[in-house]
Length: 100
Image (tube, rainbow, N blue to C red; front, side, top):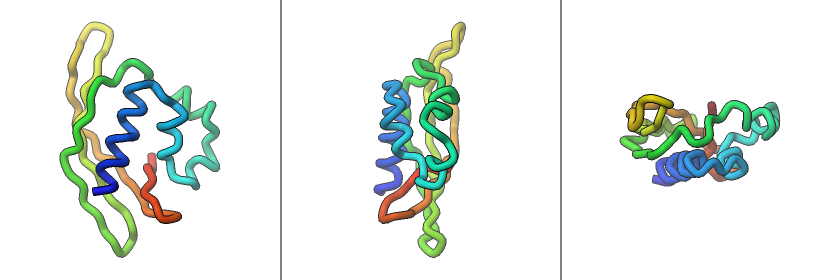
């Protein structure tokens, strides 16, 4: 689905430490209240290694999707940790956007 593709693309931008690209996936309303400089300090570049989308479930009436994914990341002493994460995405302005 387009939501799974966008979620994966956002995480690949984070993995590559491409803050501008990752920021572009935030919902327009969220970008209005969070300047890119503030967003940048919330990131941990170099920590994330891989992403795999497990599933998406969408409610077309309210235009919201939940994405379940697995992230692989490293800490200083421990490498290759996997974590299951759930994200929310909304449809707005004819596109899907991440809502932190």
